[in-house]
Image 1: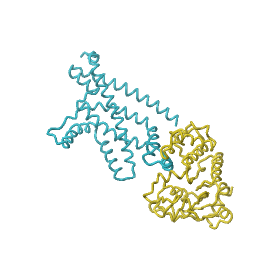
Image 2: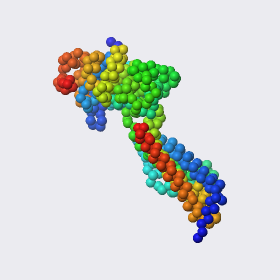
Image 3: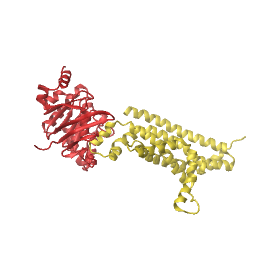
Image 4: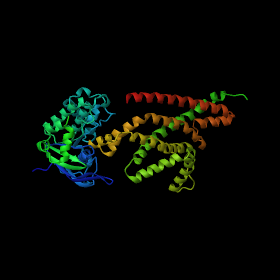
Length: 246
Length: 227
């Protein structure tokens, strides 16, 4: 079997004496879509942030396309430039126009020319249905639009994998679908994705595997059908019953 | 006692030169102070303990000493240090104007540091995360993402500090620099017209500083609307 794109091995992390991640082990193969869910405070956002070293960890290692995240010799900016990340609060740069948001890292990190970067940016903006907004600033866009731009910005770096950290939980309900639609399309195109979300509809539709976390532990790591059909752990059953009730 | 305001008219060219020096000193000290203040702020916020300790030590020192003392201190100390380094027999003349520039940049850097530090801290951590996630390094993340926003948020405070600086530059008169106040007081002493000269200087300072702070207030409202 070929090496996984993201290989998380025995990762533990402490804040002082408080352990937020406990020996987490899992992996994401190329083209696989893995949904990470669990109650708040379970460590799922922390786990996904360790993958591109935004959160340091004290024990274990993570390999992204074979490159160690924990190795101090690893060129982290280079590694991060290959892994797209989408945040809960979009984090577009408010002092830059949409076009500039899309071009910044392409020019400064990948060394593309401004024309090339703008062209690529516009193409992606078109793909998320927002090319009319190119000249605007983030503050002039709705939350859903901002998040779609954020996805386009991450894609502009031609990432080998995409990380989503609760991409829809800061959105008004009527805007959630426009963002999920973009993500579903991305998944269908074969993008390797690790998604922290409570959107179980999304998980049912496109996920290959579902990881359930609680108290910093990976409690369940199963195929989608197994997870929704016959979850093994009591905690996962309880969690599912809570969020699927309505 | 009769006032003779004609003395102002007569000495206008000399006063103008002094005024130009005051504006020049303000501009240089402000840009230098903002530049080094920003570096100090980054050092204070650094995760490297020694760096942040040194920076905060410097800032606290400068902010705890009266400006007049700092000016005196540099005026006498800098020539001695230069002498020590070059090993010349007599302390070289650094000159009041140059001393003033160095002193004010170093002193103002401490105040601008605190303003920029607040500005940097006002930017959500997520912005830094987003910059890093795109592959930007620390320097790029600061220069392209954090500092432009911090600077924009802090413009009214920075301008207010520059107005204070504009008034504080008059302290250079203690080392006989010919700034606006220095020029006026030299003429006032020569012609025995100190009251007239000081009144004139006060009015000019008031008009300029008050007008500028009103403008800053308006700007502040405008920025609040945009945000």
